[in-house]
Length: 104
Image 1 (cartoon, rainbow, N blue to C red):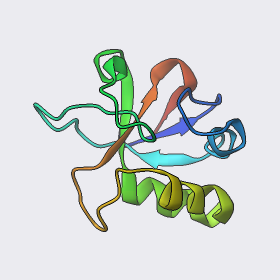
Image 2 (cartoon, rainbow, N blue to C red):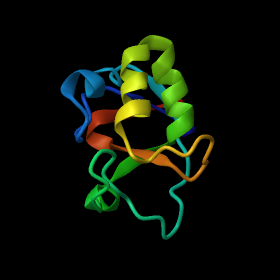
Image 3 (tube, rainbow, N blue to C red):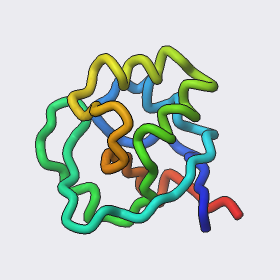
Image 4 (cartoon, one colour):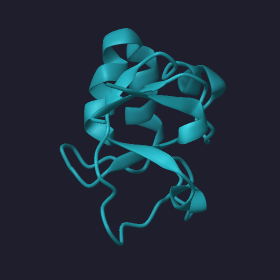
């Protein structure tokens, strides 16, 4: 499986309208980075959600897909989160498996 589709609004600190924008999008699945800590996107607090079953996507690749369908939601991520280092491939987003489905 190389891709997954978000089928339900994912949880998180982003406003509901921003989280809703992920629904229906197909994202490329990537491997988790070993030893990489999972942090909440807005507060920067450590988050244990990465220890639960999830699909992982590159932040920048996922944001590009989001921008194609909802530029306001993509801009929210750029303006309201602390995690941004332009082009940093180690920044990842985690989507719970119960909110997604694999795509062949």
